View 1: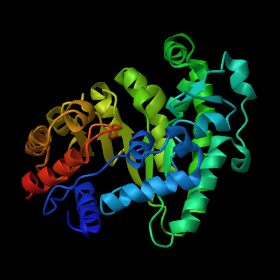
View 2 (view 1 turned 180 degrees about the vertical axis):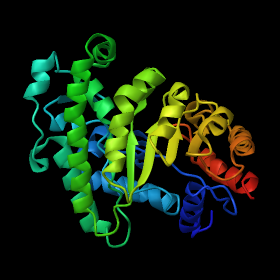
View 3 (view 1 turned 30 degrees about the horizontal axis):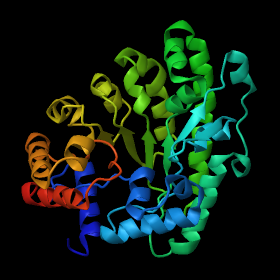
View 4 (view 1 turned 90 degrees about the horizontal axis):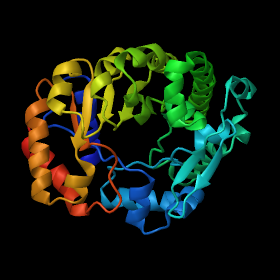
Amino acid sequence: MEKDIAPKNWKRINTALAFEEPDQVPFFLNVNGPYIAGFAKVELKEYYHSPEIMLNAQLALRQRFNGLTPVMPDLSIAPEPSALGAEIKWSADGTPWVIPFIKGEEDVERLEIPDVENAGYMTKSLHTYRYMFEKVGHEIPVVFGTTHSPWGVAALMRGTSDFLADVIMNPDLVRKLLRKTTDLSLLWLRTMEKSAPPGTFRRILIWDDLASFVSLKQFREFILPVYEEIYGSFPRCERWYHNDANATNILEGIAEAAVQCFHFGYEVDIGYAKDKIGKKVCLMGNVPPLTVLRNGTPEDVYRSVKDIIERASKRGGLIVAAGGYLDEGTPETNIEAMIEATEKYGKQ
């Protein structure tokens, strides 16, 4: 792997986002806590709770893959719900979960948008960013611009099953709760923008797997306006979106939200997605992360990447990536195979 691969790849990503054809199809290594902690051989709970351990683990991975992975605060699902008062439980393996506490509209009305300096794991994420920037920010970009969708935050605070039932049975509660969580997301992103060096806050990533569990009509009614408000509040930023659940039924809504880059899951047929929204949205995906990248062979990875490129690279607008985040334990040889296969089959 060539040492200057990262800047070349980013240039190709920007070309793909503009729906121009780069000299070759770019790729992206989507990583988060479980994979990074496993790679660095540290306990996941320690990774989440120690800025020093988190930074060192991310730097080790970044060095291994020649600058292709980010440095970023990474607190999983904890920041936004905890900022609104949710209790976060940590499992034995370090995975966080939100304890639902919204029982009715009166609980929603009691929610207050917090001071970000006293907002649970949101504050911890902010302090982690400051720590990372102090240590490496003048040499390595520290990514700050990711927010859990207000829809996903609301669902976790209410309880996903109850929240989805509310869409039919109590839509007023849904709207009121979404107003609170949207205001929080806007505050959080504005805090990130103020914290980042001038001119460096250029990309917003909303992640929202739970949006796939509604119909297109419901998506347009409840979720689309939230995305439009968030993206529209930062008109100079790129609009990235992650949803690795099966989003086939809401593809049109995602395009209507003016998403620029959509990182999607392996269950979405990439040929169908290209035909449906590929003229409006740059597609990032979708090598199966478990069956191919983690449990397959390099030959399996090559076949998957070749198929993706053949079906979706025409007219630009494609970034090859895992159809989700890289699973813990994914062999480095298979990650290298994804990069090599993209270079082999993605030349224009």
